[in-house]
Length: 149
Image 1 (cartoon, rainbow, N blue to C red):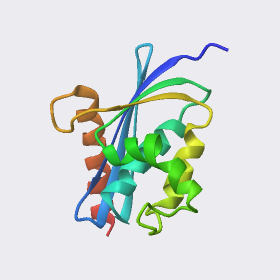
Image 2: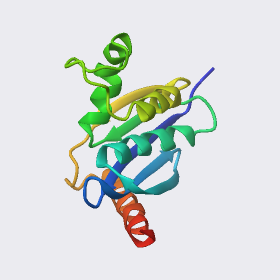
Image 3: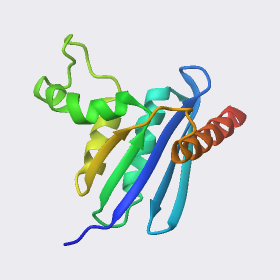
Image 4: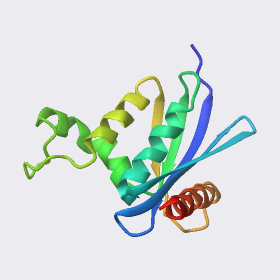
């Protein structure tokens, strides 16, 4: 089965932490672009970063080869370095504290299962076009969340 390559840029935003927040994602494949965003009224920046990756991956209709760009080391390291240890330790951190956002980490792990993903960290707000678009979408979601409060 050959998998098509999809590039995804994700970002989260929050007014106050916690506060109204938004997430955004840009999906690009073979010249096609899709922009996604959403909002939550009372959330954190980390939850929005996770939601962006979850929603983007869940939007893919078939198993794909994915390059996922994020400016969140929390998301990238959580999924590529920490999650297996958390699961081994009963969803506790190395400091024996409950893992924050366990529900979203589990949802992200489920969202990644059928895809071949390369996680790529990019510096935020550094002019990288895909990241800037995802940031704008996340801020749009956060503004909408703030208006509904």
